[in-house]
Structure formats: C-alpha cells, structure tokens
Length: 276
Image 1 (cartoon, rainbow, N blue to C red):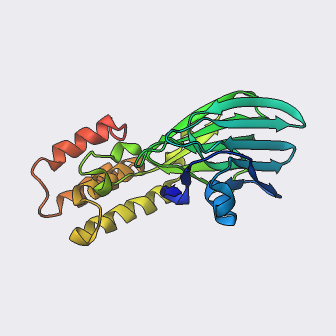
Image 2 (cartoon, helix red, strand yellow):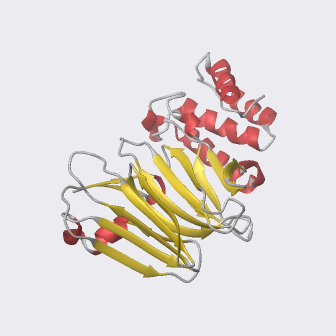
Image 3 (cartoon, rainbow, N blue to C red):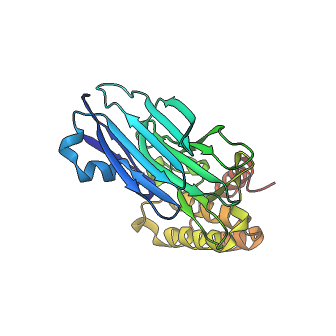
C-alpha cells in the first residue's frame, strides 16, 4: 500500500485487490464537513488492503457516497452517488482516486456535495466534482481541475459560506524546477454554477502571502524555493494588491539578480494575468 499526500494534507490512494467493502459512516452537525480517504485507512488499514473503499457522508438531507474498487495496475473508476431528500440526484463514474468527500455551504448559501479525487501523478492533478443541490444549477455536476494542488475551504470574512483557498499553478517551472517553484495564493468562489477567481477580495490573505514569499527570498540558499521564483510570486501578490510599483522598487533594490529577471518576470506576470 502506498499513500500519496499533497498540499493541505490531502491524500490519494494506490492499492491492490478487490472483494467486499469497508465503509466509514459519519453523522455531521455543521458544514463544512468531510471524510478523507487517509482517515478511513488510518482507522482500519488492514481491512482496506483487499477491499473496495466506500466513503459515506450525511448532512442536512444530503447523502454522498464515493466508492473506489482498489484494482491493481490501473486507476479504476470511482463511483459517485448523491441523494438529496431521499431522491437520487447524481450517479456517475470518475476515473480518478478518491481523496476527500465534503458537504459544505458555499459563499452565496448553496449547499454543495463535493468529491475530491486525484489522478495519481507525481504531483498532479487534483479534481473536484461539485453538485449544487440548492442553487439555480441544481443537480448539475461541475468539474473543477485544481492542477497541482487541492484546496482548503475558508470563511475568511465571516460570510454565510465558504470559499476555496488554493495556489496558482502558473508558478510551476516558470523560474526553476517544480520543487523550487513558488505559487502565489489563489482564492476561488463557487458562483452561478462555476468557479470564479475572487483573490482580490481578500487583500489580507494576499498580503500575508506576499510577506511569506519575501521571507523565502531573504532566506537565500537556506530556502528550498529558488530566489527568482520567490520574487516572482511576491510580485504577483503585489500586483493583486495594486502595489506593483512599490513591489518592483523593492525588488530592484536587491543585488545579485539575473540580468534577464526583469524582462522574464514582467512577461510571466502578463502571461499569467497579473499585469496588463
């Protein structure tokens, strides 16, 4: 058995064998609620090696099930089933490994059933299948590709529901290897049946992210992040905050930057949507 863990503690499963089912059931009082593959395996690791894995979650009339058959040498389809007020609203197959099953209230009050899955690559990709059972898009499944990262639900401004904190994949390989890359913060909201970038609505989070990347740059060789990658992520956040001029002034005051960093960073900022 091998467990692949990603950002924010999410996990994907690579197992062999298939016979009867191991089921985990949890009654949950308040959204957001979730049940992780890793938690089920930690609770009964021996029972899951040769059996399908079934994640089962209930809340506010909404029931979600995600079953993974655990076959060898392939990524078999996970079966995703959702019922609302005892009515079947979704049955589908997802050709990925289960990571998490969630029920949460989105920013505008929609009750969402979410199945988080993973393709099984070295660091990519994480996907969510989202079903809104209360909004105008009721019973329509929306697929969200998060890329290299999963997400964390946050309620940063005491709104009626949650938004999705993740990171911008544009940082991958832009200035260094993947392991040395830096990824600016990204916040998305589920609105009107689709995900929207709302990072600019959370300046305090963006400012903390900018400070983090500057600290990484200041660490120099003690940081696992390449200096130019950290500076580019810092500049991306500064652009988000409307402080591009101040950000560049701080960067230009540093010594030892590559001669082509300015041009390369400006091109990346424009291509990635931070600069016009």
